[in-house]
Amino acid sequence: MNRRMITTTGVAAGMVALTATAALASWGATAAGSATAKSTAMPAGSQPTKPVATAPTSVGTIVVQWTVANYPTVTPTTPVPGYVVKRYKGGVLDGTGPAGNCTGTVAALTCSDTVTVDGAYTYTVTPVSGTSNQWKGAESPASAVYNYSAATATFFALSPSPATVKAGSATTVTVTARKPDNSTDTNYTGTLTWSGSAFANSPNGSTATAVVASAFSNGVATYTITPKAVGGFQQLTATQGSITGSTNFTVNRADVQLTLTCPSSAPKGNPVSLTLGRPSTDAFGNPVTAASGQSVAVSVSATNVSAGATQLITIASASTSQTFNEALSSANQVVTVVTTNAPSGYTAANSCSVTHT
Image 1 (spheres, rainbow, N blue to C red):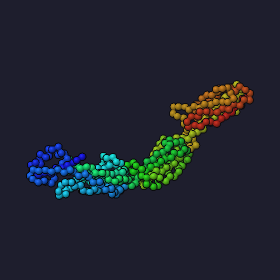
Image 2 (image 1 turned 120 degrees about the vertical axis):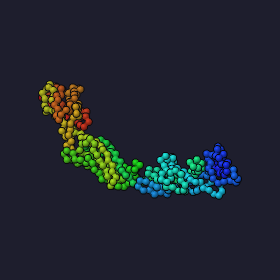
Image 3 (image 1 turned 30 degrees about the horizontal axis):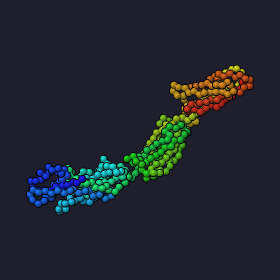
Image 4 (image 1 turned 180 degrees about the horizontal axis):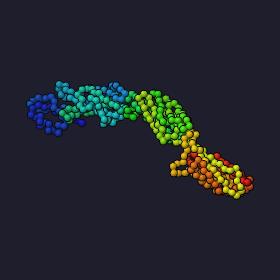
């Protein structure tokens, strides 16, 4: 766009201000005569030099510099009175900046911006004139890129996988060193201290086992723990100096095996009485209880009897007696009874055999 400024003296100045180009003009040096005027284009901004930066832990200072923009046809040489600085992040105008003394109209040929978010930054300058910067030159080309990165992490983000485990089963926790803007501190190399209820002893005194966290690589480490105590939300916390982070995961009791007991023999033609039981605790002493208000069922089948000899037995207490309603029909017949379809939290019971007499 051809942006021009008009210089004048005398009473004609008021009339010139009403012309169609007034929005792009400013008042400056005079021409000859008492009512004469001349115009000049607003200069374009010069490309800023690559920013020089100092980067404290969480705030970076970027110094932006550029050369003077002079009115092209004004004599003697006259610089524009100010500049507007724009900040771009990743090639897109950054609506949050610039900051520091790069805001508003900058009269100098340098300013210091402050950034707190990691990113690739560039800057432009636009010469301006007028009481409200109504006259503008062309925006300069963008400066070279400055890649800003905060120096250190300020917290850890922890993520367990899986988030629900059974006592005696491992979960692996991924630890990510995070900066204030939530980006990853890829240079982090700290040593972690671990704590939390996930390390609690189980009722029979079993202790959680853990594998030392892997070394940080690009800001990420892993830690594996095998809890033994049941807990709805077991907490695990990683700490290094003032940096910390926590996560929760669920620990359910370990699977237990059902027990199946049957008589060694039964009279021919009579049903067989079976006893299905469950232990009161798992291998780590955590209690085993049926779900509140519910019972758990398994199927019991027998071989060497008529087809379809299957029925349900309910696990409602530590030991439940049921009658298997399949009469033994042949002398000296051996019947093997097994459990099938063991529900979640249980493994199938041992088999038992009955000899027909």
